[in-house]
Length: 237
Image 1 (cartoon, helix red, strand yellow):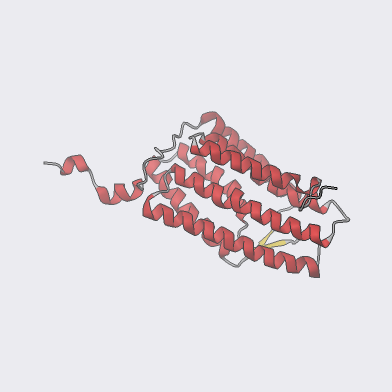
Image 2 (cartoon, rainbow, N blue to C red; image 1 turned 120 degrees about the horizontal axis):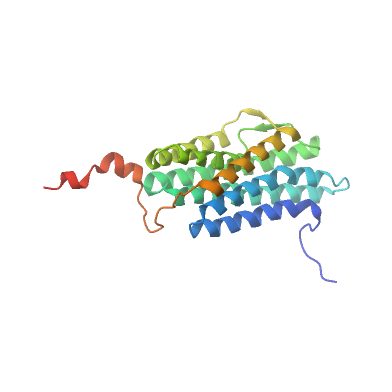
């Protein structure tokens, strides 16, 4: 009889769907379809919001299945809410030395947080079980809500200012990933309200945005160029 490693039941379906959505979103972002990429990020966030509830609905899970779920969730989160949002911000113009440093910082903080979560959650499951009521620091999945909401500013702000906002966003969110402070988990009603707000936001982006991703061959950071580059035409004799 053929055997496979891993867990294959309904408890992991949402986690895999979120992963597939993020990978597909990456391919679309690379090709310049930013609206689809934002939708995929939001969809991955929605899947993550309920995958834990679905997993806990199975009452007879073994310890190995619980531990597998913890590891699987964090590994997928690295891609969905670590690499994927960083890639979107890079493609939007967070580039150059400054931009790359922020992208690196964001991804490293996301990995640190998820590894720390795995250690704490594995220990907590053995001692307490059930669902944890409080986060320590900002969860990485919050970027699935924060980044689409931030993108709404592109309707109101000049492109350069919007790029500055993206730079600041990456740094602040990454810093909050590793800052140790208590944050109460939202309840089901709060989650549903957040998803409804996120759905409205994504709908506006899909319907109205005309944002164009900068040329992928352009590796420069336009913020630095604008501040220090000056007007080349006026400087020429």
